[in-house]
Image 1 (cartoon, one colour):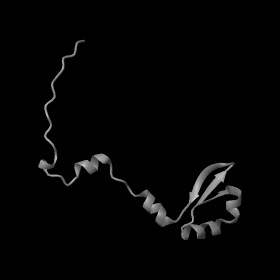
Image 2 (spheres, one colour):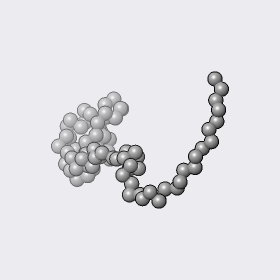
Image 3 (cartoon, helix red, strand yellow):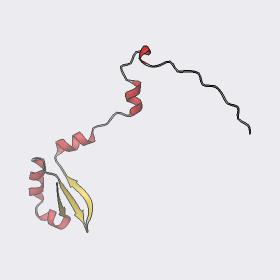
Image 4 (cartoon, rainbow, N blue to C red):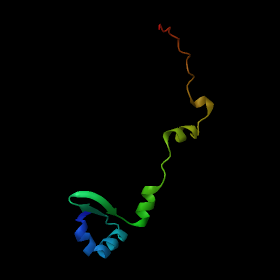
Length: 81
C-alpha cells in the first residue's frame, strides 16, 4: 500500500484508480495526516460485510442441551446495608 499527498494524488488520480483495480491500495494524506484510502470496489464490499456479534453466534450455535454442563446453584450471600 503506497502513501501519497493529496496534491500529488490529484495529478495521478487515474493511475491510482488503475492500481486499486489491480489490488494495490493507496493512502491519501493531507499535511502528513491520513485522510482517505483508494481501494477496489470488491475489496470495499468485503470490508463492509457485517460480522456477526458474539451474542448472535452463541444464540445460533448448533449445540444440543446435553452439550452444556449443568450449572450448579450458587449459594446466596447476605448483604448488609
